[in-house]
Length: 159
Image (cartoon, rainbow, N blue to C red; front, side):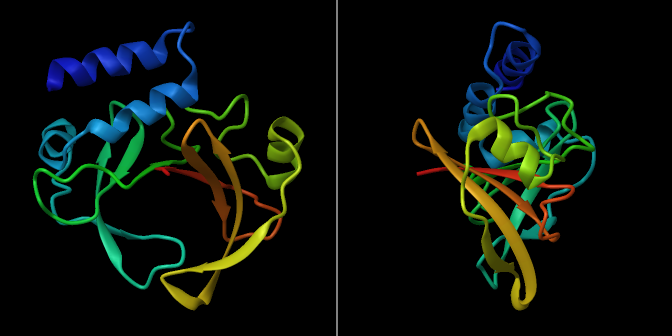
């Protein structure tokens, strides 16, 4: 699996591969393999996601620059989300040319007009704003705690 992940990482860095297609290939990374690739002990790390009171296990894989979010702590779990933020996006993952860290005006200019969704993360008292695009069977959700989408993060999920 490590060899496959290295090949995936190299493929992402290749200019011929499309960045969103490369990101979607991460959905086959089992939790045990992500933990092996992680440089830190992230076996107990969790994260809150939009419109859920629960927290979910996650593993940050430094070499890929993504956080992989799982439904449970099982070693055989496969991801439910891939999280990409601008600070750690070493794989340069984008949707078209829209990248995490952009604000909503910039994202709409690239991907097209969408209505911003006002929602919540972890608790109804914690407001989250999102722009969501469905492309090739995946949801690409740019999320921010700022209404203008400043410092957005990209959550990718399978439909």
